[in-house]
Image 1 (cartoon, rainbow, N blue to C red):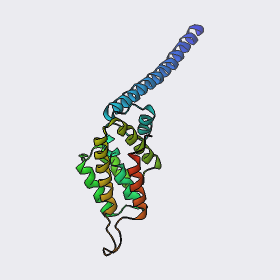
Image 2: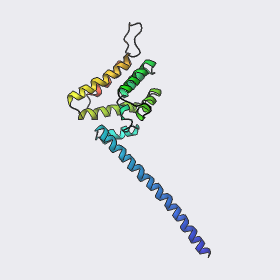
Image 3: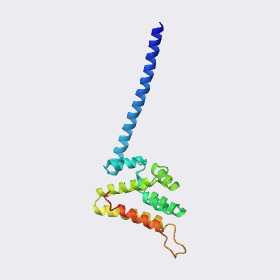
Image 4: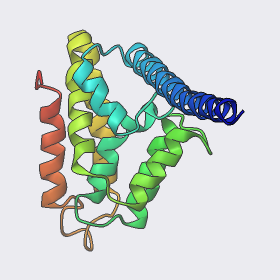
Length: 191
């Protein structure tokens, strides 16, 4: 009788162990499927097939819902160029977000707000440059020039938002000018 109790207990413990093990395996499989779906959706949304670029975007939590915020990275970077964001720069970035169609309460605007609240990591700029390099490889020259002009115009608006001292100095700081040149260069790098 005691052998049957021990055997029953052992069987119960084995079942519990394998149930936990199977559940953990099932969760890993679901997570892998979800990540594969996110990667494929991001590839479809961006037209980018470079796995390394997609992996960097995903590591920064860029997905199809937040992709629109990625297009506004240059404005955010220019706003942070002098180490802090002025009220005018913040307004200019948010006006650009509204113009780009970011929805109030949507994930892209929430991500943008986070970038305006806390300076983004340098990896974000590199991911944006990788994104632009991959994107511009797929665009005809005229569309690439149009995209470049649009992005740089928006970034320039943010840089000029603070204004100048009594109209006597340039409204754009040297750090902002340096960043604007680097942004422009990104459109001509094949990555």
